[in-house]
Amino acid sequence: MKHRQSFESIISEINRAETVLIYTHVLMDGDTLGSAVALCKALRYMKKTAYILIEDAIPEYLSFLDSNLCTYDCNVITELDLSIAVDCTDIERFEKRREKFLQAKVKICIDHHHTSGYFADFNYVDEHSASTGELIYKLLKLMAIPADKQIAEALYVAITTDTGNFQYSNTTAESHRTAAELFEIGIDLGKISVELYQNVRPEKLKLTGEILKTLEMYCDGKVALAFVTQKVLKETNSTIEESEGIVETLRSIRGVEVSVFMKEVSEREIKIGMRAKSYANVAGIMQKFGGGGHIKAAGCTINATLEEAKVLIIQEVENYFNEWNN
Ligand SMILES: [Mn+2]
Image 1 (cartoon, helix red, strand yellow):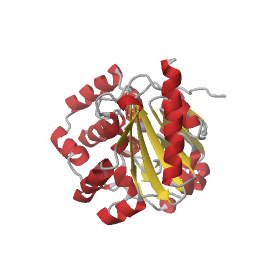
Image 2 (cartoon, rainbow, N blue to C red; image 1 turned 45 degrees about the horizontal axis):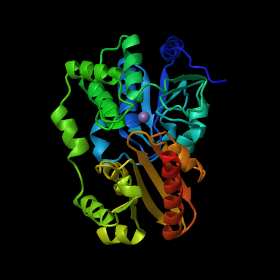
Image 3 (cartoon, rainbow, N blue to C red; image 1 turned 90 degrees about the horizontal axis):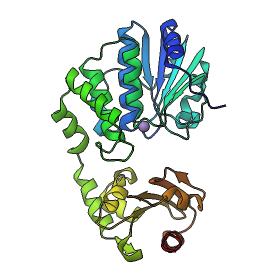
Image 4 (cartoon, rainbow, N blue to C red; image 1 turned 60 degrees about the vertical axis):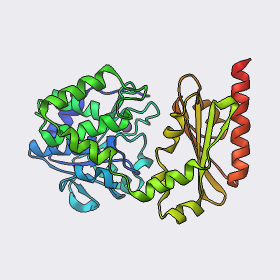
C-alpha cells in the first residue's frame, strides 16, 4: 500500500547509518543531481561515509555541482548501511545500480512524482512538491544541518530546473519560499544562471534552427508540431538529447494549446513528447498510444516511420479538439 513514511523515521535511519550511497536517476536532471549533492554534503558534515553512485555521465551544464561526491564505483563502499534514491519513481530508473541499492541494510526513497512506485523500505513521496530539492531542504532543516553555499546552490538548481525557472504550473509558494531561504544563505545566482541557461553549444542552436524549419500548425493554430531526424542530427553534429526543450519552445507560440515534438530514435522508433498550455490533457492523448505522464506533459513511443507516426498523432489530436468543441 502506498503510505508516506514520516521524515522522523527516515532521520533516525540516517542517524544510525555510518555508510550511505545516494542514487540519481538516469538521464540525470538538475533536480536529481542537485538533491543528491545537497544530501551527500550534509551526510559528510555528519561525519558519515557518503557518495553519490551514478551510472551515466553528468550533463555538461550540471557538472559544476559535483566536487568529489559522485562515483561510478559500486565498490566504493562495501559494508553498506543505507541506500537513498532521490527523484526516482522506480528502481528501473537506476537499473545498473539496482543490485547495490538492494544490498543496503535499509533502503529509502525521497521523491515527488505521483507515479512513484514506493519501492524502498521507507518512502517519502510528496507529489505536491514541485521538486525533490524542496523535500531535501525540509529534511536538512529537520535534521538541523545548516546549509552551506554549495548545498544552497545545489538545491536552488533542483528547484529552478524542475519548475522551468518558476514558470511551470507545479511551482508553489513553497518553491518560492525555499528559493528565498536559499538566497539568504547566499548563492551565486549569476554563476548558476550562466551555467544552466546561457551555456548552449553552437551545434545545439543550429540543430534547433533546423528543427524549427519543420514546424507545422494544425487545428486553427492550437497545435504546433515539429520533428528531428537522424539525418539532421548528423548534419548538425549534435545529439538527440540536445533537442530537449524544443517541445516547450513550440508550446510558447501564441495561441498554441498543444505542442508535439517527434524524435526519430531509429527508422521505426519514434518518441513523441507532448505539452499542454492551459486546459488540454495530453496524458489522455498519449495513453491511446500506450504512453502517459502528467496532464500537461506526457509522451509515448510509436513503432512506425516518422511519416506514419505523424499521421496517427495528428489524427488523435484533431479528434481531441473536435470532442472538446462539442
Ligand atoms: Mn524532479
